Amino acid sequence: MEALLSLAFDNIASKDTQKIRKGLRQIEGMLAQICLSSGKPRNSPPGHRRNASALNLGDQQQPTPKKLGQLSDDLAFREFFRLQEGFEWNVVTRVADCLDRLLGMGSSKDGQNDILILSSLSNIQGLLLLHPPSRIIFGREVYMNVLLDLLDPYNCPAIQSQALLVLVTALLATPQNTRVFEHMDGLLTVTSLFKDEETTQNVKVKLLEFLYFYLMPEIPGSGPHRSPSKLTSAFERRGSTATGDDGGGATRKHIRSQEEKQNMLGRYLPNVDDLVEDLQETAPFNSVAC
Image 1 (cartoon, rainbow, N blue to C red):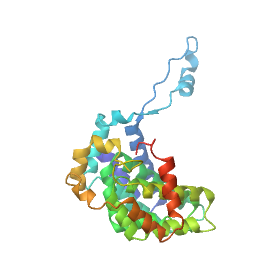
Image 2: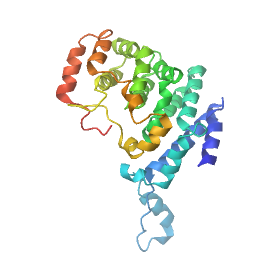
Image 3: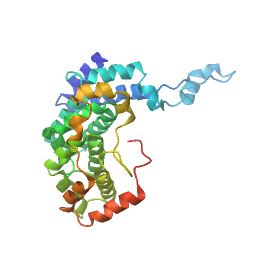
């Protein structure tokens, strides 16, 4: 796994877009091998041995996602998780640095740079879900700023939507990151994009979903709340070591109440009370395993 990561890191550190694309695909392929069960070809029917190869290609079962409970016992996943705890092999940091460089390169006429940005964001989202302690890097302003830059109006709707998904994943069960988001005028960025007449309807829906997520209580209580993922629980001890969190005390001191966040959002958006009321009545995230 170290050899594959080393090769991928070299590729995404390049200024050559072809090498960057190859490196991102190598990382995506590694994640797919960890998360997917390999499909087994079905036996060919008797009497058709001459075309067995063609039949096998057509009848191969598609890979299926492994169940969440299987990952914590999977040797490949355990090795991946172990490597992510050290700076040298942490993939999120390397892909986030690559994303920052791609932003500095500007848009290309053929749209290839946008495709690489989308691929980087997709990889980061998957990596943060597989290794929740890596979310800590978005507690650093330089990395949070990259996500907020992607929400600027000049970016295409696909990038804006994917950046919002990554932002949610980066803030999930990590209130210290939410405080950095607020400190860097993240609420102003999100609400400005929401109020912009040129923002597409699809992006506005995702922005509204993000605001619902932001307003959720950050501690368990009555109604919906932002809870740690099952993978975080499965690796709670190791995750605490990686993030430097001493049993949750460092996290609790960063928590803000729903009312405080409601007041902060109210500076930029009217009718926040209606959003909170709707959130409490519909509980849109209660059925989601966050």
